[in-house]
Length: 507
Length: 110
Image 1 (cartoon, rainbow over the protein chains, first blue to last red):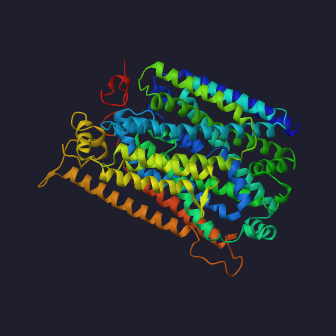
Image 2 (cartoon, one colour):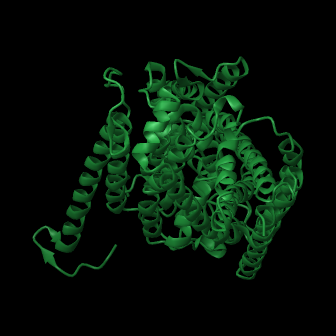
Image 3 (cartoon, rainbow over the protein chains, first blue to last red):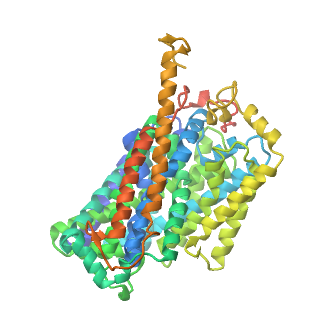
């Protein structure tokens, strides 16, 4: 059996498995409410929660974009291990406050928090909508990148027996089917299987690369000989970019709607913290591994030959598959692992898109089956709109990630600051969000993505934060602030202010 | 609030000990987070100069090896920090549809 035939068989088996999982998940459904569909009834245990967090955070970008970036920039891209780990560090600012509020107040989407936090502020509704627009744009962007990567991998693994366009359309339809049938349960369970496949595939590929090159020292020496700049210390701008990327991705990634919804979906706070203990080691097992894979490709692939950033990993796998039957099988499995990683991100994005559009943008915050159905319909609508764009192949994944993050990071004050600072007003937060987003968008449109290595999104966040702080300090929010503290407390103890300020609010 | 089983001069001893333990955990967690912040600063080679050519450590350029070591330490300390983190869901069980309070975001419950 040749590589393409093996690829088709593996793809068929994989798709059949996904269908089976979605059928089981569909039968586990309880009442079809938004909480049941979008959060899996809030009953994800440690193992599934950890793997769904993992598979969602590490996506097609991690498997196709990051090796390409490491191949282009060299060892400097070791920073990716730092910024992926920063996500689990920054969760310390978010999780201990947001999770209790989410459980006790019944949040389903990120916007539920914003609406609840600023409920006594007349600018609260506008802020919720603005946050939801940025989140929808980021999710759609993420979904687009994932669809493109799905098409590429399906075409590669089957030797173009399944063309790019068929891969995009067919696999997008597949995701829509199992997400609609099984909701978060189907997504989380398929994520768990996909996470295991991804981890196994990456480890095997790195082992092959290292053993065939004669070990890590030999790899580094051959990289230094092939491209000395790949082992050189980064210059001043590179150092600034390193810090900036850690800030950009560390802060923006915790605001991923799909990540926030997984915080809500955990069975308990203890389950969530245990999952995060495991998550903190995953950058070493994944991002570090893909960086080394990308760097190890430097002496193997000729940069001048015009290999595209996203094509580094596939080129290595194709080379590996030519070494014999067992290598061929292993390469096919890595391809399927990559495909699963991409699909696990796409399905999470799609699930979040539906709920964010229905609840946060349109304000349909009901708890009945109709709201769930609306979320599913909206997700399908967006998917149909995005597919034609995904069929264009000329945008690389790395730029898509950065654009998405520059928008998403502007939502940080509405979450990370608002959870800890009681005086923060909705009006100032909205003004800051508009200022930061405006700055980042104008700079990007004028062709500037970084200033001195610092991302325009990070500078936009500084502008945003200053507006929020000054606006909140100088606004007439004192009285409103007191109303918020008193008015949102339920029976004097379990309101959102009481939950956030446990031990500090007078009872 | 749990029932008190041991009473002392200042009230419930069990609760006092519990509060002390929580305060200790919070303090340790804060130190760990501070150490993580410092490791992040060290992980980026802003303090290094490019003189002396390529030096290998554990098969990697030395500045890369230092970064990897920092991130491995961050992972270990962060795991401890999460084990010391109390995410208190409160006494309330996750809400079911019938239990959702009036003032929660799910206001349109039929």
